[in-house]
Image (tube, rainbow, N blue to C red; front, side):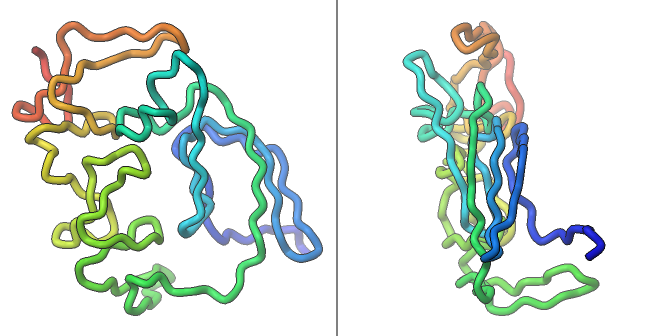
Length: 201
């Protein structure tokens, strides 16, 4: 009656998201339309959308390079999206969660051993973040059960720079436009020197 909304969950990606309209149906579903530059949009829980750009000159973002981990988390152009969020049924506890309690209105999950609960999605120990274009990150319950950890290749044959997995010897690139990409002559991934910053070769 007051017109005030109630926050129920976070949706979106790490790029620029521009929802233009949202309407509700008599059944309680929500329809949202807009534009985004996020390569991956998370709608809550395990529901996500991966956007793949097309173009013969594409060499980054969410296309073939996405599968290889050589990508940023944003697309080069705005992409239109239309999504339907259906009315939720009774909440189902993630399979890797043994229990969950509230402490000062903050969820405190008890997670099973040898599993991770990252962004409300369960992963077995050793699972990688390859789906998100980051194959050098893994679920390592020994370090943390709620965030991705560096995999065994980071610092040995890979770097993790700018939130992207880089191979040993890979040079820094800068994309001026969709067709023009500049490659550094001296800045490269040298995991033995630094696994999180560009090194000077």
